[in-house]
Image (cartoon, rainbow, N blue to C red; front, side, top):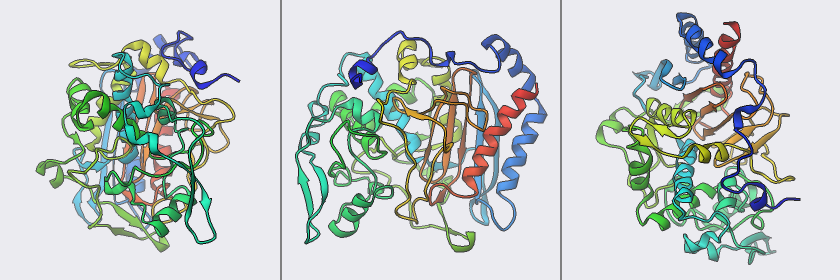
Length: 431
C-alpha cells in the first residue's frame, strides 16, 4: 500500500482532475453555457427557491447562486432573514461554518507553494501544541479519560485530509462525553480550549471529520506570524476582490445577518436569536468561523474554476489547483456518513449515499457521477447551518446554497439544495 506521501506529493503531473468522461467536451461546454443563459434556467431555479420557502414546512429563507468561469449566471433570494421579518436579499450575511475550510486550506497551499510548509513534517513544527496531543482510548470505571501518546506525530497533510484524529462532539460519542462530562468546550465558542482536545485515534489511521482544518489555520498562523484572518485578507480576499467576508463582522454586516433557526418537533422553526458565532473570537477558526455573503463566496469558487487566477492577481498556481482537487485518501480510508450524535446540531447526514467519495485539500470529491448530474471528480462541501456548495472544474460551473438552520442535514434545505443543483444540470442536458 502506498504511503500518504507517495500517494499525493505536491505536485505530481498525473493529469488534470477534470479528465474524467462527461457528456460533452470543454469546447462544447462553452457553446452550451451561452445557450443556458436564459430565462428558462432562472425560472427553474426560482421555482426551487420558492418551493422551499413557502407553506407550513419550509426554510426561513435562502440565497442561492450559480457561476460559470466568468460571471454569476444565476442569483436568487427567497423567504426571510428571520422568520416573518426582514426579507432575504442577495447581500444577506451568513455564518458559513465549514465552507470556511476550503479558504483556510487555500492559505495552507500557498505556504506549500512558497516553500514554507512541508506537509509531511510534524505539524507541531508550526503549531507547537500539536506535539502534546494524546489519544483518547476511552473512559475508566470512574468515567475519567484514558489517554496515551500517539504512535506517530501529526502531519499537516493528515490535518488537511481529516485523518489526523480530531473529531466534532456533534458527530462523535466520545467527544460528546468529553463535552458533557469533562467540560470540553464547543468549537463554536471560538476558543483555544475548544481546539486542544484529545485525538480519537492514531494519526493516519482513518478519516474522521473534525477540527483538523482549525489546526491547519494555526499552522498557517505559525508560518506567517499573523492572525489567520489577516492572512486570508492579504492572500485570498483582496486578490479575489472579496470584501464582505471576515471572522468579525462590520456593523453593516451585522445589520444584514440572517438569524439561525432551530428545526423543532413537527418541523416548526424557532429563531435562535441568542446564538451566533462570536465576533472577535479568541481564535480565527479556519474550520468554521467565517461570516460572508454568497456573492463573495462565488468569487472564491470562480478562482478554483479558473486554475487559481483572480481579478486582482493569482491566488494559486495552476499545478497546485490540479493537484489539490484530487482525492488523496489511502484505502481503507474513506469518507463516511456523519452520525448526528447531538440531535439539536446535526441529523445523520451523507452526500450521495452508496456512491464513492474521497477527500482532497480540502474538499469532498465524488468519485462517481452523482444523482444530481455532478460529474465524477467534482468537489464541494457544506456548512453546519445547512449551507452547501459544489465546484465542477471539468464543466466550468459551481454554485452555493445558503440557509441558516440547525440541525445539519435539514429535511427541507438539504433536499432543496440537491434539487437546485439537479436543475442546473438538467438545464445543461436540455440544451
